[in-house]
Length: 411
Figure 1 (tube, rainbow, N blue to C red):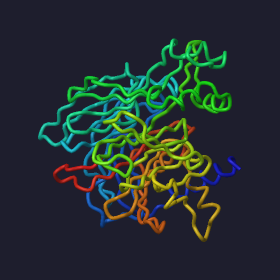
Figure 2 (cartoon, rainbow, N blue to C red):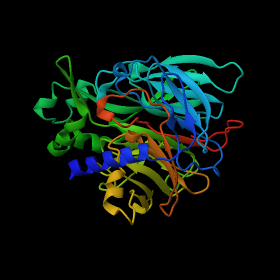
Figure 3 (cartoon, one colour):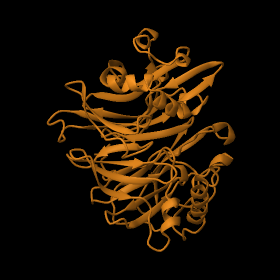
């Protein structure tokens, strides 16, 4: 079934890339002239921040990669060329563009994450600063709240901590890692750590002692580098902050997607404790959990081999909305054509629609609550990519900003 799904996905991907009409086009250095969107949506305001994902830079042959601000009409509003290989980016309310770059590319699960490029994009003369937090393995994303930043990172679990649990013998020699949330001041100095192994102790014990859970985690999160084995028991891939929801009222909390645990968790920053977690079975390898109201969250459920986007009520743990690519005329092909095994995201827009990033294919689209696709966009950056991704050009996640005139933005 998975092979059939991948065949469908490839066929549909080629169709999307080759049969997308004659919309706006983009030409930049070392790029081909390519279509950006079809149809292009003109009634949205603001712009989309598009950061192409580079996984195998040695096979591309360039040293700079563009980050693009794209209008809903498919027009390139701004390009910033980043030295290095970006994988994610965020615009802040102060008019600062933060772009995550990889310091090195050893293996997918254990890259040396943590180098960010900080650009003041609202001033007349753009200033750039490199922030190297790679020693903390800072990865994926961050949020800003008042004068502090909250970054995702991970660190090694001390051997003395591991000795408290009856872990399988083969894990004793491993270097075992778990996620942390790092609180940084405005100068990017760490002022506090919130550790997964401390605020989620029961889950940690399960992932260190349950043979079935360990076996499942090893398939994706065990790697060997220079005869040393590295093993991750958690994998946070998104973090979003809310100042009030039905579980944590009138104070800040963090909504975190843990891909390794196939769950989403809510952490109270004031009480410093876990206050909610999603039920098992609702998602698999998910990304980009966000609040859409005080009671509901959205997330991209990668759910290999075919993906879906869901909106979940956190009080009832019931799914209130799903988009899975289904189409009445070609139900099987359409459903299997919507597929991204990793990366990707979803964001609810100010008008009630959703922008969905189908990351592996480098496609993002606007879809209504009635599951009508109103506009489809394509990664405008087309350098030569490795054969493993052909004919796709991946995007980690696209973020829509409704007001880019004064950069009073959302995250």
